Length: 432
Image (cartoon, rainbow, N blue to C red; front, top):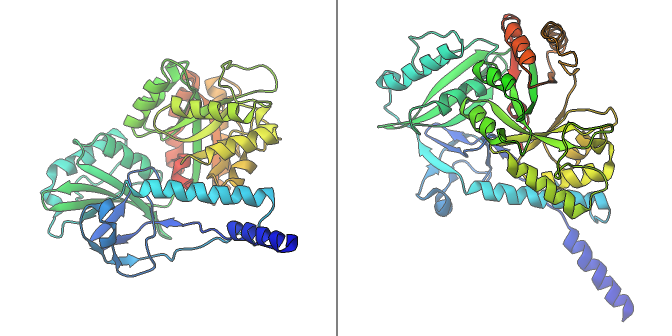
């Protein structure tokens, strides 16, 4: 009797552990319809491996019957966990899968279905056309002002930054979505907007750049002189904002309005001293529930964020238990993580990847250890040379919200453009 009971219990345990499916997400586009989700990552879950995809069974989501005749469709992929699953790492992976699928399910409810206008001509939209041209001019981007349905931009232009600026400054809510992609020779972006005839799009194209870099501006929130200068520039740096300062939410909102990507600069304990003393500091030794509560508090403190990087944290990022708990909680949110690498022993990136969080690491020196403008310009020259020697990598570096750093970046911008180096934000190359 005992043997039978044990066998039943083990059988039930294995059945419960089983296998899970991760639903990969892709664009689904057709010649006459497009599905999109208003989020920074512009992706939708695959519905079925079928062509065409019948959407009638999704009436509660889309609100009307429609069939999308899909021109390109990717097959749904499955990731199976080895059977049986009994170790801690596998259990964490299963939890990550469940949370990811729950997150995708929540986002599906935000989808919309639009039908392209079939008889639209670009010259019918002189208002939208003039808006595009004026925005290109304000961003110092040379284009053919006589173009209509397609604009060719220089290789150094960041299409997502340009598109966000156009959308945020657009007339009302007329412009609705951004869709991006690339082929072997060029990058492209579609901006979708409403016309009287239906949904139409204007295409932005550009050659591929010689190199790509990503520059984070840390410590935004408790100063102001530097960030105000950055926001007046047309450089797609990423604005990383400290929480709980009086100006934190203001600069987050203003940055987003101008098309800049916003990050949370999460305060973590340093090995020696700290420029940030606050009750929500992430530090080793916290009880799990306390750490989770602090993480939730700081994530709520800065609006419009797409990702997180650590402020200081040379002590916290070396601690396995702290980073394990932090990334476990962070994986429940649709954010990426950038390890600022304030310690060469940091394990933050390792745990972010373990929990399936899109992650990157700083892989070039801090640009402003020497605060003098001329010294920062010299480091930016080194960054350019380093990136040109590594054209297949994205070189990620960090500087801080000081007026001297903003002046240096502004002075070096012509050289970035002359060398056809594109400046990206992490959200441009990291996604769920």
